[in-house]
Length: 101
Image (cartoon, rainbow, N blue to C red; front, side, top):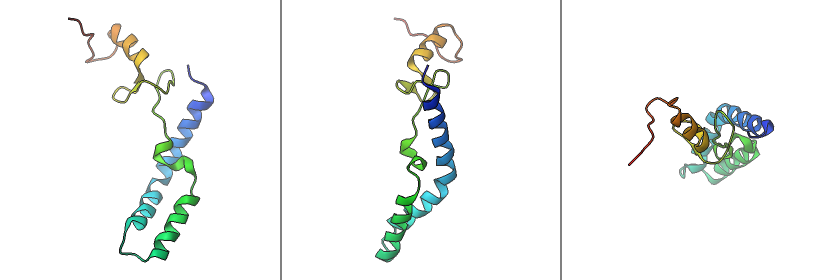
């Protein structure tokens, strides 16, 4: 089980990402628009840099929903490899079968 503080920190990042997403997208659109004057684009870049870092999508970590494990997480199931195998072996995940050959 991951530390509860790490899980909560990640959840707070997700809330901030959802809250800041439209503003970040608008600023990035201004920055990437080459038709605008350089000064306006520079101001938008400064505003983006002044925003909290945890509002960036790259700061979010995919974690297992059951254990909070950060590594070896399958995006489709939102479970770590360990829990995926455990639940799959007991037949608790619909559509997942154990391979044998």
